[in-house]
Image (tube, rainbow, N blue to C red; front, side):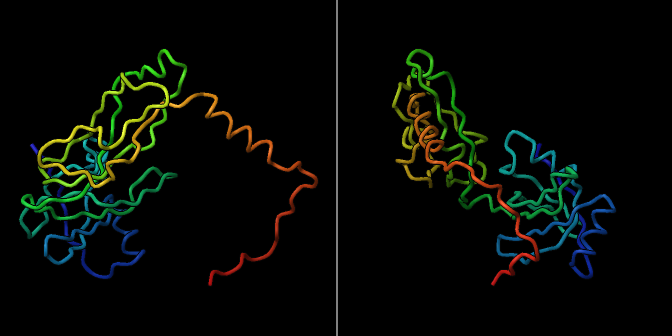
Length: 217
């Protein structure tokens, strides 16, 4: 059963003070837009939003938004602002979803198994892309894309073209883009050593500049 997020329309001025009052009341300000309809300023329960963001499908989860005075609509989280110090959400952008129209989303890539290049050939695994962009119908969005890397040897790579391709799913990320590769430890260490050798010896401690920062033009 899909998650149902209850929401209430916001009225009045939409400024920082108004947003602060919404958060003090235990809700967070949000905006719902898309699918050819006007944008609606709403307030939602942050606990419901966090439950969706922390689910396996994360921000790609499709759920119902039930707004007072309006019927429920299929939606997704497209952007959010987070306060790491207070560990709280500040604002959410929601987009209406048309289930019969394709959309572009970013999906995590999971590497399955241990590469032979790591296990027996002394290499290290470097995952270059942790997610890829795809295009498909909303109902066909995968939670993640799995790729078996057990046969990946030293100096070999997995590219987007090697990921599982299914009917109805198109990769927007370039097919020749490297997802992961096994590199030698020596190749990894050499750039770091060269960087350390190029660093000039410190002579005097740097003095911090005082005064007002230069204004941006």
